[in-house]
Length: 166
Image (cartoon, rainbow, N blue to C red):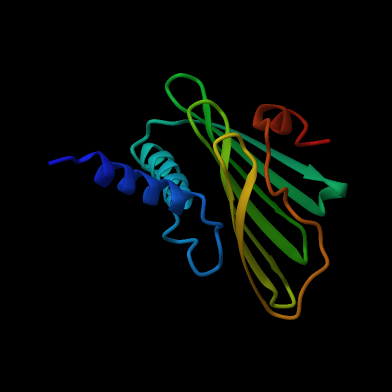
């Protein structure tokens, strides 16, 4: 009995699925997204267990009308695993959490924004193993708000944090 054709068929079907484009219908079950969700879970689990060192920074800008808080989350090897930004003014707020693998490659951004007019926006943005955009799941409700956006991706969170108050 020969198993090579069966094994080859299984390998081909697995690799064929990973080359399937990510869509609004398959994104939750797509293998690349599931891998990234594993990184997200790993980082948040480490944070919850107190295994990540937090480095916060707060800035008040424009005469006090705008605040931004940043926090770097480092693992025991000193690698940035998460970078969290929270910003707001009198009429809008936003938060972005950027997630990185152990090598510092960005893989996921969870971004929320809200405005005093009732607008709410939420984005889940996924990046591949070298940081290229894979897929964005965007949800929005309310009349809309033209305010500034938090970045989709931050490649260098240490430099971004250093320039936070500028």
